[in-house]
Length: 265
Image (cartoon, rainbow, N blue to C red):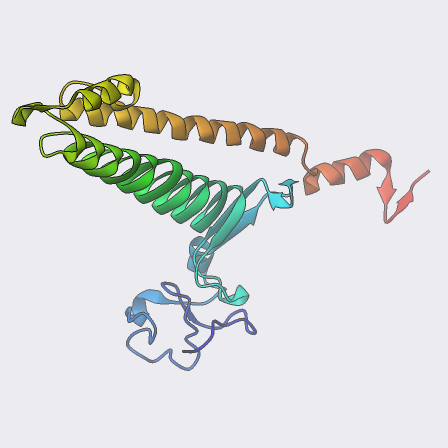
């Protein structure tokens, strides 16, 4: 496999995967991803490349990380097949940070197709504290399929589990299985299960399965939003104390009469 183009900034490349197309511009398709060349052939000088490749970050930093960072698309000049954004707030193909939003997100608050973090929201979500998504795993997990300490979903596995099909030490639902089961439709009402679900009612709801998912989803969503707001406040404070922009520095130089290291009389 040919490396990404880095020595010649205007070399042809594939906009879909970043493959170096030098010597392959007459091919019908990209040798790496198979996309038709007529669709994906780009050069760095092509205005369309600018739209697909974004690398931006704040000057202000906190603990050595930029307050915000955005990275999308392949950048052959840097040898990058996709954007990696790292920052207190990171948005990109792959995002790592306090609030991480991307195709793949790793962060305190992670949002993405695959999200991994303290709190996570995504197609597939793994959260130490809260996870919410199509497939979710975490301390408090809500999803189509959920696994965790307290799990709610169409299919749920956990210490406390509830859903259409639930498996746990304490399980509630039409098809629940476990040590202590609450399944009124089957005439099973274990007192220990009743007590546990009653004590957790603010988190897991009561009544029928739809209300369980709604209550658990609202609680999980609220936790994720509150975590994001906290990080957002930290980011705003960091930005307000960050480095001055180039324009601000220039205005400062003009006010003081500083030019080339000398102050004009």
